[in-house]
Amino acid sequence: MNMPMPNLQPLMPEILFLCFALIIMILELFLKSKETVGLLVIVAVAATAYLFPQSFGTTFSGMFISDGYSSFFKFVFLLNLTLTILISIRYIQIERAEFGEYYTILMFSTLGMMIMASAGDLIVLYLGLELMALSTYILAAFIRHDARSTEASLKYFLLGAFSSAILLYGIMLIYGLAGTTDIMKLSALLLKSNMKLQTLFAIVMVTVAFGFKIALVPFHMWAPDVYEGAPTSITAFMSVGPKAAGFAVIGRVFLTGFEGFTPDWRLLLIVLSIATMAIGNILAIQQQNLKRMLAYSSVAHAGYAVLGVIAGGSEGLSSMMNYLLIYAFMNIGAFSIIILLRNEQERIETLEQIRGLAKNHPFTSALMLIFMFSLTGIPPTAGFIGKFFIFRSLVYAGYAWLAVVAVVFSVISAFFYLRVVMYMYMYEPSETAEQALAPSAPLGLALFITAVMVILIGLYPEPFISFARVVTG
Amino acid sequence: MVPLHWYLWLSAVVFSVGMFGFLTRRNVIIMFLSIELMLNGVNIGLVALSHYMQDLRGQVLTLFVIAVAAAEAAIGLAIVIAMFRNRQTVHVDEIKEMKG
Image (cartoon, rainbow over all chains, first blue to last red; front, side, top):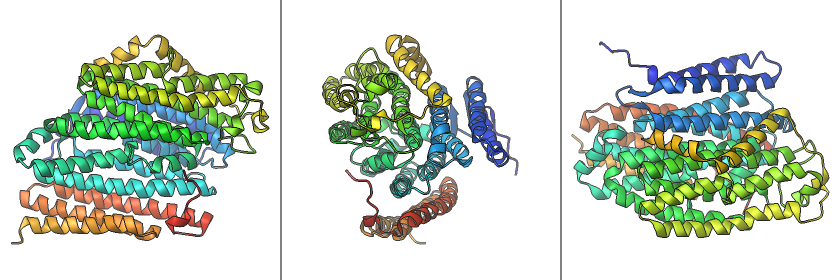
């Protein structure tokens, strides 16, 4: 049998990244200092990012697509990985979970996300998703001696595996109806099969599965427990990475693969997004634990990002991509502050514990204030720009009423974000807030990058906005 | 020859039994088994469709699903063991440190 060699050029970043991951996995056995391993991963990230511009194209008969859209998402994933490593280095020492595998598993998870963003076929999509998800289950349980960490991982694993099974059933139905798993050809073939009811059932199954992955209400119930229990650095990682990967896939599958059924899935997503924004923002109000509050906030933010998919077109997609990029900076920034507060003695995670933080740690409080303002969407921070372009694309698409609903929930969210600021600035210090912080150079760098980007995108958004618009064409 | 829809019904039934088991049983190991049952329900459907359409994609996906399920089993059981060392239970109703 004669098999022509497929064109590997579009796949080069992934291949290089995988080689780096495998080499680092072996090197890590001989390296005493785990900081060096983290540094090596950042070198791998830089080398991979360097290959993106030359990698455009389609290969393996349409199964793997590398274009501007996927490259933008891969950029977000690599950024997420870099920031996560910077905030992890000191943190995993404090949590006594400093194993070299930590970094390689982070790399494998990121590789899975990159494959998802480039998937042109449902089979590739499933494999990328599983590589990402299986790695993240391990990372969530990384503090093995901590009951909360393993509990979080167990919950994440059970619901994640359950949702993948549902996704597979949806893929099976689509395969049966269309006779193919190629996302590009799906729409026409599904319309030709003339079985609307069955197709809609398959679309619902796929929506449910992705809803689990990006934590849309009513499939969000795992998120608060998992985000609270997992190591904080991993919470930061998985509140951005897997979520952005889920959106990358939704953007491609729904807008291309299910194009012929746009009115139907749009209705479904509108219902889900309103429920997500409502439940996420309202339940966040009663949270005392900061990690748990940020978990509900991340549920709510997924609701805003879905609005970009509902608006559709290159305008909606680019606003959704921008939102995820901005969300990466502000969310990882907020989690970095929680990591900074974690010292050798205890976890400082609740509102009571940060009471009056500004008295002793004015600089830390000021940074937290920036991130909280940005998550609320107050100008001149990046969060405002993200929300503004999402709402604008909604209005252009003729969903002005939905934009109004989103703004209302955005106002509700100000209550719990600004309450954090109030606790830090307007109360007398509690005992815990007077304790020493656990600063380190990499964590400082991560905080510097995130804070500067949040302000910079807020003041001067033009290059970022046009970048996303150019890559979506 | 057995008609295609028999296989699809079998696939749907096996999948539903797995889903029902996942939602009703409270032992982690049994819940995990139920997920495997759901995956195998999908596999039956994929292989049947692949055979009737004379298209190999379905069988390729089935092989991948089996491989991924094996990896998932390894990771899942490892997590269950780590959990058991901390808590001495495999009953999900007793795993409730975090709530709200």
